[in-house]
Image (cartoon, rainbow over all chains, first blue to last red; front, side, top):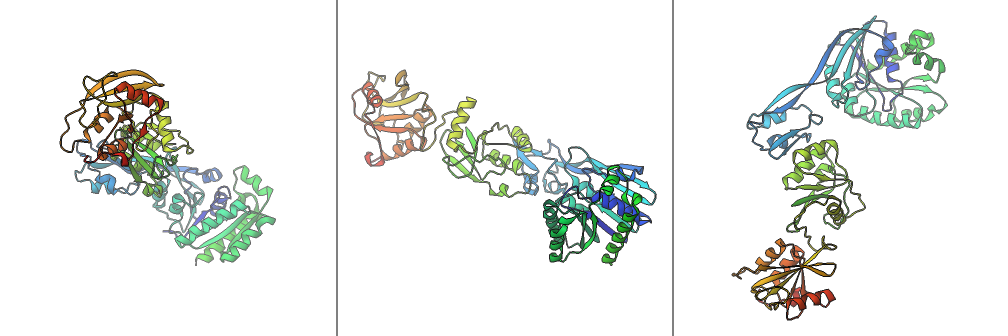
Length: 281
Length: 248
């Protein structure tokens, strides 16, 4: 069990979640686990170039109907709260996309005509670079059950003191699966109207989940004032501001770790991590 | 044949709802009787997911054999296939359900048996018109028309296309049993009759004809031919409940 679990999220995409998470991992300077929960487009590994040590397939359970036993009674349909089943011309039609693997239809079927089968939805890979251990979820192309994959990723055993979670963008089920039960949520934003708008949504989500939060303004410049004002009004701490800096963008564009190349940023990431840890305590 | 139409309202005069799964209402029209079953779909409108599949279940449970709507999503489409309900898509929301039905009929050339609609605006306005005239033996254009609708020996059926007689046929009228006033109604409805020319009719059969969309015209005339000519000249009046004979 990690001592600190910190998730990094943002409503808007492209604000710098992964960059921030990777750099935080880099400045930890002791054993740390980075969990890439952006399973539709995981890319933390692009900065880390880890050595992959393990890979496992992840599957979900879906119902399978024995047509010889099914009498078309619709009990399975009546018990499915996800509208995944229709009984048409006396035969059940099950949408695997809509099924949430709850198993209610199995229990409801009076004929015991339903069993479950395993359907692969993605992969969990494990890699490492120095003291950084990377756990990455990768959803199969065309698959919709991202939350199911994230849920399974979150159950992986973590043996480091610090766990950093790189969450998927947005404020939907997948993001919630990635950030639930964390000790602290860092919301990365940028000083644009879109950034602020989506930040507000993320803050609502975090409040709903009752998670401690702090904001990081990335690419900060003269237009950061509205974000600062909003956070002050909401009494949400701004943990750090990373100024708009072409040097930073350049290092990033080569897929390199900023804290490794630019010492002044090493210090800033270090201070930010220290501050978050203090806020957890 | 039952046809499901997605609508924003509860009558066929209302606009089409372009959405299928999240349509406000389904109107399930029975083309034989003209009856419309209104299904409130607000439950699916608010569903987090699976509205399409559930909507297919709803219309399938009500016996729909055809769907008229704007757009069907991939999951609903799969379910429609399973339910063997073909869909007529791409109807714009500017059309009323009536107009969509007409478009459906003309675009698909679908064989919709006896598409008669209550209070209509008959679907077959532009094609042939089929008149029924209660007649005496032996029937046909030259036969005398019968003054008594329910107890007439037979009906002469005259098909008109662009005001020309294109076909004449004769059907027997079954014996008038107790409370049997409605039997000729179903008989003529099955023959796709659009209008009946009488010089007297009871209240019950009149409302019966009204309900299946067969117009009832009132007028005098000795022979069947006289009646048809009067109809073509527009000399007949449509009948209201005030004009009915008593005791029927």
